[in-house]
Every structure is written in C-alpha cells, then in structure tokens.
Length: 536
Image (cartoon, rainbow, N blue to C red):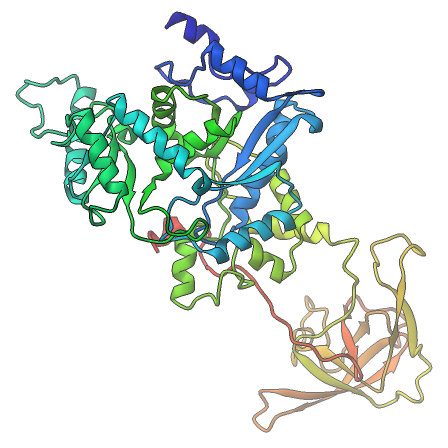
C-alpha cells in the first residue's frame, strides 16, 4: 500500500504536464493508482514523435439536444483543460464519445444533432466512438467480474432494492455516531440482497439467461458486489446490467441486456486510454465506484476531475426539464430560439465564437456559482460588434408627416457608416434618405413632456439620428384618444435657439423595409429557477 500511495494518481504523465491543475479528492484506497505495468502499456500507446499525447473525452448521452452547459464541457475537454495542464496543441487529443447505453431515451435525431453541434462549435475530435459499439467488450468484462466473485444476478424488485439501500444508509449514519452491529440502538434490517452470495457458476448461468432473453424486464439485473457498509451511497451494489427489450438506435436489436452508465462510463474511459475524465460535481460521489470497478477489472485508471455545472440566471439547463417544457407546450422543439440549446441559440443568432468566448470567460471552478444572463448577452454583443451592420429600425411605428418638407433647406440624403464604432473613414457606408413621411418608434413619443425625457412631445424639438431636427406641431389620435395615429411636424436644421437638442431618435423612411421582429429574452421571471420552483 505504501508504494501505491507514493506513486499516486497520474503516475504515467510526463513531468511537464501540470496534473495538479486538474487534481481533486484522493481516495482512501489505492483504487485510483495505476500499476507500473499499466503505466508502461499506456505510455507505449500514447507516445509520438512530438512527445506523450494527453487525451480527454467529450461523452454526451444522445437523449436530447446539447445545451450551453455542454458548450462549457466541450470547451473544457477540447481546449481549456489542455491549457491548464500546459499541453501544447500537437500533443492534445479529444475523443468524442456517445454514451449511448439507454436506448429508451435515445434516438437517431439526437445522435445527428449532437454531431452537428460539435462541428458547428468548431471542435474536431481525434475520433468519434460509441459506447454501444463496445458492448461485446463490456459483456466480456461483466463475465470477468462475475468470475472473480464481484458481481451477482439479483431478482429483487426496484422497490426492494430501495428498501435495502435505506437500511444501508441508516447503518452508515449509525456508524458515524460510533455505533456498531449488536448495539441496542443499531438499526434493524439487512442491507444486502438475498441473492448476493449466489455461486459464481449459478451467476454465470443466470447472466447468460438474461442475455438470451429468458427474463422479463425488471425481473433480473446484474449488480456489482461493492460495499454495503460504505458511507457512500454509490457503493451500495450498483446495477451493472438490466433487461430491456428495446431496439438500439445505433446498433439495432442485437442486445436485450444493456449496461448502465455506472458500469460503462469508467470502463470506456479506460479502454479508450483517456488521461483525464472530466465531469461535473454531481458525479463527485461516484469517484469511489468509478475506481472500484476499474480496480477490480485490473484496468487503466484515468485521472478524474469534477468541475461545477454551468448555472445561468433565468435559465434551465437540464435535458429532462427542457423535454418536459417541450412536451407541455412551452417550447416548440429543441431548436426553439428561446431554448438554451446550442441549436436554439444558433437560430436566435448566436455564433459559435460567442459561445466559446463565453465559456473561456467564465472558466471552470469547483465552487457552485450562478452566471448572470446579461453576461452571456454582453459577450455576444462584443462578438458581433465588428460584423453586424448597424441600421435604424422602429418596432412600434408612428407616422410623422412633415408640413414643410419641400421648402425646408435640410439635407435629404446622407451616407452613414455601417459600423459607426470604427474610426472615421474605416467603415463601409449606406445611404439614408429623408422622405416627406417617416416613422418613429412609439417609445420615443409622449403626449406629455417632462424635463427628464429626451424624446418627442407636443411643441418640442428633437433631433433625427443622421438627420435634421423636427418639432411636433399636432398629434392626431383615435376617436377615444388612446392611440396616436399620426404626428404632424416641421423640419429645420436647428431649432430657433440654434442649439441641437439632446434627444436624437431613430426613424425609418416611408419606403423602409417592413420586417417581422422576434424579441427573445429569458423565459423565466426568477433568477434561480430550480431553487425557486423546485422540481419541474
């Protein structure tokens, strides 16, 4: 044990890799430490002319569209992790893996959309893999686990398994208080499955029967014989395989038993020679079970690092909750522009560079945090600042008719910059033409003026942006006086006092283009949606 602890996790990494930057909690056991033989094999596979390769992975489950939280994960696994580790570009590799072990929730639409989003975000994986394409290897490893006496076929119903886990939790709480079995206050009940001590031979036969489809769904499952005395709930004999008579969207109907995420994820990391398995903090308690399985299968042990989830104010980032909002009619689909999915943000006009810049800006931390929605919007505005041509538009138009248009000696045409933020003369231009009738926005007009208001009001002068000044002479309203139908105004280069007004309002000529405006903001009215509303 002393030698293993001295080696420590990540012992295969070159000295120039700053593994401390992605190091988290060390296990009490040595399950997360590789052997010298495993190090040698791993380094032989990962050494090139440029040095030792460092490999991460991006492993989404195809049970929905990717959202902006996945954009953060992509940025971390394709870029930021390597920067933290000090790994140069020529030694970086990222595997794009579909963790497709739950065929009931997965479909070809999701598989295709995820692939499209990864490409659109600008990431190029070293290779693309599917957990389902490794089902034969996973099945063989499950057999190995049974043969070593570390897995058993269980016939408990899910409710019975939950009762046993509740007993195990009570026992763990009692141990934390210094109690032990036999004490008067020791909780009653047996946390272990009655099938836990089934013989290896019988378990092999039963597992094969599961594979042959001899059991209905929910009748039998393969469980790992972990540690029912642990204080970590994820060590309570997790399910490794279950029966599902559902065709798989990627590999068809070859299998009627499917491995669970907890069995598949760590094994795939090892088989793909992943150096850093990066996930979010809710998986931190799975660290023991992750390494328990790799240790008992004698597989390579990647380093594991957990980072905080992305939380944005006024936004829900849970595929399960987003799907419920779709099914209940709040959204029209995964690519609804109001959705925080990458497809939805793309339809809204967001660019990949803006999303990546946002992810770079917020960075990663192990502390839970809430990112302000305005921060995302501001970074998007900065991103398109040099590419989005400026123009004037009015969303709620009010007609303005000039009584002295023909007689007024004011400029009727002007060249204005497409990008007014650039130095003078460096931007392309477009022509703005003043017409006898223009339209201003209802937000820029009031029937009653006050000194803090810089818009147009009866008897008041304001400036037209890129144009002359106007004065409201008359207001025509609907019969009930509630709706302004037309403003009658006069034109002048300057008011009689020869001073240009502080207010300059946008306008559109009478031959301006009519358009449909879709104004998107956050859907929810509370900043911390889950905390305020609870489960959706």
